[in-house]
Image (cartoon, rainbow, N blue to C red):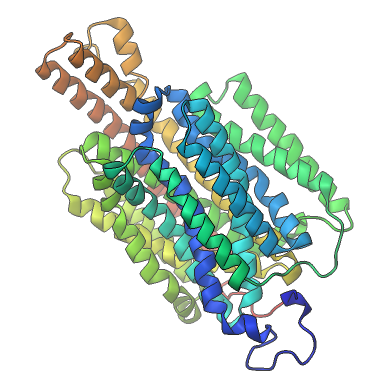
Length: 525
């Protein structure tokens, strides 16, 4: 029986309108859903530290390495809204189970990939599976918890979303220390099997009781528009922001998304009513999540490379040094509803963005001689900041929609994460690449062709240096000089990028805290 179809008298005041069986196991439901969420977020963040190993094993080019990361985000963001709508229409538990099966088959294929194209294709399919899983997790939580407990449940969900980002580098580092690169994918296969079993045993189902027909045109416009937007953001740093491919993708995204808005405004049962963005809570929450993940994804992208390329740590060493982010986030996020209740959403959001700004300002000073304490303090600040601002923002997004549209509301929450994360990596990656390519390696690499190859990225510079040393073309002292020059050039870019992130965090805290309502939604729809 659907949670939305609980018959009169089946639940009393003690269960607050929730099916008694569902109410009794709601915390087990939350644990299962948070585990599903962590799995797909780890799939995003775990790949960064494994890229050097994958490059060596599969002989992947720099462009192919970029698409290993970007293909997942591209498809994930594009499919989220239609996947959330399908879950609302046909059942959210079924959508989650479908996503788990697709995701499980894709990670199994990824672990056995023999060339970069096979791995990229598997990542595309993983993105489809994740797009069905993620909105279902939050919408099932909304239907499993009474209103007064929902802020705490959503805070825990948001906290684990952030924890997944921090656990990815650590899990990859541990696996790469002991197994082959494919283990970072294969480890998900037994986890998917456990989650499928749990979904059958403990998860309730729910769907939109009105049974409205699917908005296929709106779904198509949203999917193609978001894919075009994320593609343009991804390709901008690689092709150039004024390249015809990049500009064409941006133009296509604008045309398709404007078409989506116009279609939805005229449709009797829109998949996502654009008028919702007139609501300060919905708009402010969406902006806050977008900029929070713009900052967080950028931070992990830059910091894991800084720790490996500049500081010289292993993949595991880099992962362990971002662990304080996860620890502080998981401690603060559950307390966020109480903090918001006492001080209000606006003050909590300002404080959260201010803490992240402080962290980025610290990281903007980091170089090869910086102590680990600097990273520890910065990671603690970012975790606490995200733990303060994300739960309230997510609650405003999903609390602004009717319960019947929980899947779409959850998908909007997730789309803002993905678009913000992709945009953050693209912008900060472009800053670092621009600074790095402007560096002069002539004094350490006399050969023009080798100097040009080394100037593309820090990874390629280290590859050129290693190849020259192994081939006997340079001495150890020359190798050390090239590695140091590449690390310093990369570090110059990361320092500028972190300074930019600090400015973004300060502006976001000041502007969004003026727009978003100070109190969370106070009733069910």
